[in-house]
Amino acid sequence: MIIALKKDVRKEEREQLIHWLESYGVRIHLSEGEYQTVVGLVGDTTRIDTDLIRGLEIVDSVTRISEPFKKANRKFHPDDTVIRVTEEAAFGGGRFTLIAGPCSVESEEQVETIARAVKASGAGVLRGGAFKPRTSPYDFQGLHEEGIRILLEAKRRTGLPIITEIMDIAHLPLFEQVDIIQVGARNMQNFELLKELGRINKPVLLKRGLANTIKELLMSAEYIMAGGNEQVILCERGVRTFETYTRNTLDLSAVAVLHELSHLPVVVDPSHATGAARYVRPMALAAAACGADGLMIEVHNDPPHALCDGPQSLTPEQFDEVVTAVKKVLTAVRE
Image (tube, rainbow, N blue to C red):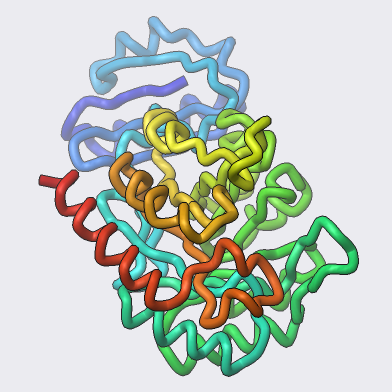
C-alpha cells in the first residue's frame, strides 16, 4: 500500500500517522520527494481500512499495489534514486557514468595501463575481475585476493573507484575497500549472498541472469534492499535466446520497462551481451539513446592475448571512439 501525503504536512502529523500504521505490524518506507512525501507500507495490509486513511486531512491518495517488489517499486519512490560513488561517478537521475576495464585482472602493469587510458577517455569507474566464474573448470579463474590488491593499487594511482565481482559470501571481507560490488548473472538468485549484501553500506551492481525475467531481477534487488542496503544498480547484460550470431540477446526494452517499474538506475553491458567487439559500439549508442544510466564496457590493451573474453574487448583507442560517439547521442536525446 502507498499513501501519498498532501504538501506541507507537519512533521508531527506525519509521525502520528506512521506510528498508527506501525501498530498494524507493517514496515514503513518513507520517501520524501521535492513535491510530495510518500509513505510505503510493506507487509500484510489487509486489516488496514483504506477509506479511513483516505478520510484523513493530511492524506492526498491511497493506492494498493500488487507487485511483490516494494522497495524497488517506483510507486514507493517516485523520484529516481541516484547512486553516488564519487563526485564524478554517479548513476541515475540524469547522471551517466561509464564503467570500463579488463574482463579479468592479469597483472599490475596491465590494469594500470588500461585504467589510465579509460580514465583519459572519460570512464568514471574501473572494472576488473579478480574472481572469474567460468563455464569450464580448466579456464582462467582469476587472481582472487591478489587481483583485488592490484585493483586497489590502480585505484590509488589513478583515483578511479573500482568495481569487481563477488562469488561467495566468505570473500566479503576482501571487498571492504572495493567501491561497488558486482553480483554476476550466475549469482543473481543466490539469495543468501543477496541477503548478506543487504547488510552492508556499499553500492551493489546486480546483473540480470541469463534466463531471468525483469520481475525476477527486481525481486533479487528487493532481497538486497529488504536488508537495508538501498544502493542497488541494475544491469542489463543480455539474455539467452535461440540466436547464435551473438553471445546473448541484448534486451534494451528492459531499460525502458525497468525505469517505468523502478526508481533504481539501470546500466547496460554491451560487451557480455554481444560477445563481439564489433557490436559493442552500436549497442552502446542504442543503450545511451534508450535512457540507460551508464555503460559497462570491457577494455583490454591486447585483446588477442587476453586471458578472458578477448573477442568482446575493445582496445583503449576503440573505447575512446565509443565514448565520443556516446556523448553525442546523450547530447542529442537530452535536447
